[in-house]
Image (cartoon, rainbow, N blue to C red; front, side, top):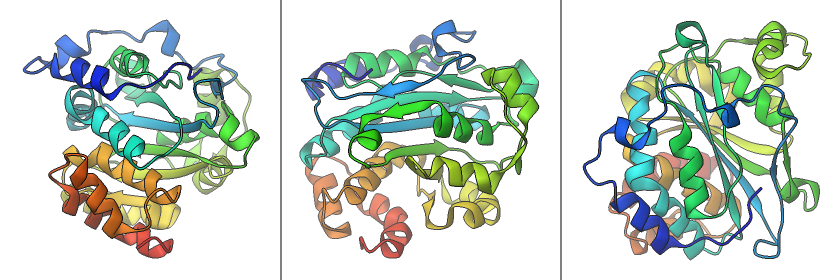
Length: 293
């Protein structure tokens, strides 16, 4: 997937039309859309095309349980055009975005919803708002990591050996073992039990994976769990409103589209982001550890 061209103006029109709408008005689904059921999916594909000859796969795997559900709503009503504007302004070539949602397997039996990689504003928004926000806690973060390690195919990696970017939001620890029985149940594939460190090593073959905590309080609560697994790729935000800006900053830094944090802050400010300083500070540990500061 990923055909067509992106229009910032069209994207702004979509999000601004939702001003004042409730979450249920934007996310109407109360059951999982069959097109977002990952069971039996061989691959979600990010492919080059005439319009996008240098595609780059980007995944947002959003924890939509409890208080985390405010993030996809904010992305759909405010944040996403700013994410794409920063990448466009810094000349990141042909980002193709996929939205996935993680929720409670024990509460409503729907642990993962997965859209398609898309380039146009309309299709990105369509998959994002197809997500059903009904759900509780006990997320299977490890199942999502496994899906993207084994069930994505991206030309950026296959043709150019450039990894995609995976941004998982959350405020809980993961299970420390990927259950083969749950993989069979929810994805339909055979898999031995696997420790979480092996799952993350698996996804690192094709993605730069990040786990994004929405604020300092919740980040402090899960830092001891996630830091040993992801090191500097565990990102703690100042505010959930910075989710897309932080993700865009990590892509721009990782792709060399900005030279460092000073240029990133200037680019964020020029794109209209009023929280550029807070975003940059959240990314400083990762930038320092990866020679991007």
